[in-house]
Image (cartoon, rainbow, N blue to C red; front, side):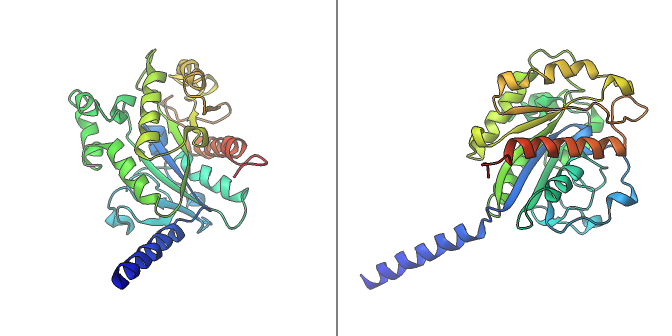
Length: 281
């Protein structure tokens, strides 16, 4: 009987340790999409200095060149996606949030994105079918996630949930799904799977979707913004982030560094409005 009591006490102590290790003030955001979330613009000197140590990134792959290991947290000095990706909206999303949140709050980013991919790549049931017809140049990037980007995002998110609380999701994708009238439903499928696989409450987990490069900067996919605008009608807690005034690269598909900084701030402004309005935690 005595040994049973001791074992029960030890179990309670273990549960207490686990609960204590999850910091409710460590706010984690999942990011996914294609090249604009991956980060296409060259990282400039101003992007690598003065990064608050409260802003963290979880490395989703091993990056020996950066001294990073998969599943570990680091100060969020770019790149925030893979080892050699560029500046991404998540860079300035996190910086903006920290500048407007109490000093006891930390922000963490987990970014799994693949340039050129369709939303189908994040369909947990059918991604392999999509990869059968995906271009060869994409396969190397996908293989860095052991062939399953969605699976890697969930794997890292579950690990992160031991440290903090997932507070929302950032999406930038759509250039590779032009004229896809089912895109909103496909995004909903990914979102619903994330809610189920990570035991998240949709009412407390907003999805922020950024617009494509706008017409004012000769965005080739600006018409897709009409689909993005429909997302909140399919996912009640989805919110659109405007790209107006965010400069683009000459290719008409990507934002330039200034554009990513502005777009990242817009994501941050929207998340402050949605997650941190008066009375919310």
